[in-house]
Length: 182
Image (tube, rainbow, N blue to C red):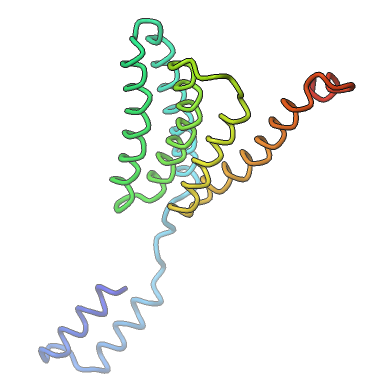
């Protein structure tokens, strides 16, 4: 609508249109039916595409993991994060929903990166801390991007971290086997 207003203003100043005609054109253009935008099929394709992309990256890395040196593993893990988030940044101006999907897969990959980097460098195991780091990645994504995918992951991962921490801390206490078997 802004492009039409600018064109009408320019044509009115040039004397091609008079003011009442320009107003009638504005009213006509405002009353026209707008395209619906993203239909449910496109959203469904983006959701399934994001799931398939995440699965494909995971399967590719898993298939070649044993063949890679620790340095190559680290480069693959960090490269995966960079490619997904840079792809999201590049897609944002033209297709916002694709950018949201790519950043969502990037945040999921951040959880895998936390676990894989811990494995690569034989970091002491306290897996609730890994869930916390993943939750912090999701929170950073929510703060920076403000989209619903990052919000959903943040709101799922924070309670997951609390439950994981509780489970790890109560391990060995009486009745803890009831809690950890769930």
